[in-house]
Length: 465
Image 1 (spheres, rainbow, N blue to C red):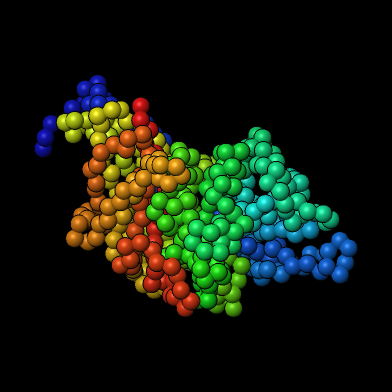
Image 2: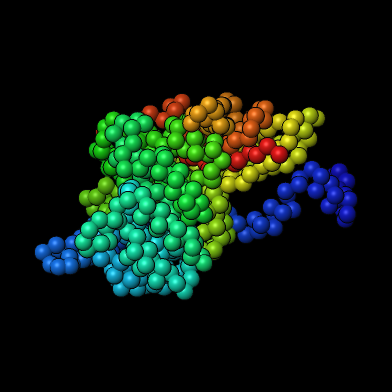
């Protein structure tokens, strides 16, 4: 056995060769990959009797399930956290306050082992929909009520609330709360008319909204819900603008919208959700929470750390349980190949002139079958590096790995890439698939989603120092 230095010498060596290790160890104590879902509907996504004035809410109109049932199913499907996100209508804020809130308390009491956040599917003025997630606290009920009452697009009984200025007012309101909520734009390209031809959500709007409240609007659904439908995967009904491998085109296209946002230096994350309304076995177009799509957060099993992980981008998105752990680490090396510093998903790595990059990706596949009774094989991994380019188009580099190019270490698959430092900084992200597709192909009618599985990491940023 080799001699292991102890005491001050050991501490000095750790600081020299692993400058982030002690700090990371303290922050990471008790953390693990925790799966969750931030877009789930219940009976309080109501229908409306519009023969009355004001319209009368009809429970169960858009989903038949109780919040307690959703929590029980989510936990049974391996989720550690869940966000209840019912959507609105004329005067729905009162439903949120008087019916949905007590139902949330009942669900928390019935399923105490599941971290459950309150929230809503916010009707975005000048947009479509977004998940709003409220931090746990004494003011959850009131904040949810006021956000929907004063800012939701569909809330007014008369008139319209559908301007960009009103959306920015909503974001400024949330940004001004002592405990800021989180917002993720839902299914951003569902109303697109073609690849690169946008509908109700445009890239410029995402950037403007994020710039208005960067600690509130932190990302978008990379993989939308409604994946169980065999007609239009994700309910992306325009055949010219489908999902790609189950992921929204803004995320799936290398060098596309998401990469352009990241190349600008903005911290903007992606997730995967069920958007569960009615399960396919009950005649709907959805999977249950945790049945197909998962967002894994690196966190302790407590609400505050999960919430912080969502805000800080310590997470990855996956479908069909293709993987259950993803470790992406980017390091700088000096001219002699010695480690200078490292960073992981959601973090920023500062790098000086003359340094080179080492990108390390480790993924783990589950040892048990998924909910389709399969253990899908991982066919390839891809490392993606981006930086600002000419105009709005980022400069991209990619490297693909298959089973003949990666290594296995126990339950883990590992890949590594050494490359020069991006000229002005940039970012690194990763993805992988159960398919042989070099890039995800447009999804077609009748496609089996269980045969087209992907995971996407969130990025590590690189900043020139």
